[in-house]
Length: 107
Image 1 (tube, rainbow, N blue to C red):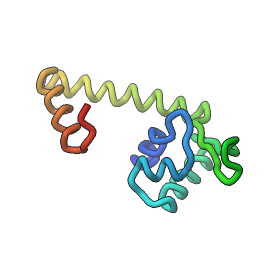
Image 2 (cartoon, one colour; image 1 turned 30 degrees about the vertical axis):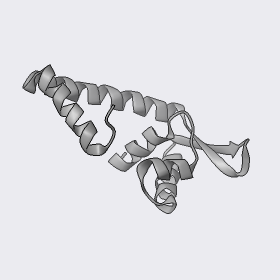
Image 3 (cartoon, rainbow, N blue to C red; image 1 turned 60 degrees about the vertical axis):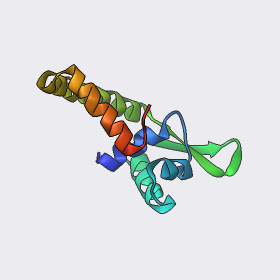
Image 4 (cartoon, helix red, strand yellow; image 1 turned 180 degrees about the vertical axis):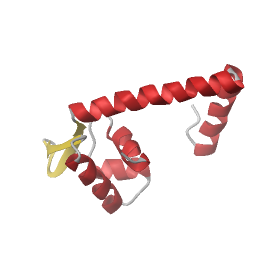
């Protein structure tokens, strides 16, 4: 599993097309298709016909994919906890806010 695989898994959410994954990641459809194909081959995603559009395929997480996402979330929370212990919760909150501003995802 690579970082780009992880980002693609997040982009799939509760279901997405390869085109939607490409848009969410800011990459070409070809790049997204290559990543998605690898995730399907590895058993993390499944691709099914889109009932809204016969030409499109909907991507969904398999049980293996959902397990990977749960483990990834726990690992991130462990790292975040370590950061909080190192710099303190207020500094961590400020860091997260600054990163949100820098990435254009301010909430």
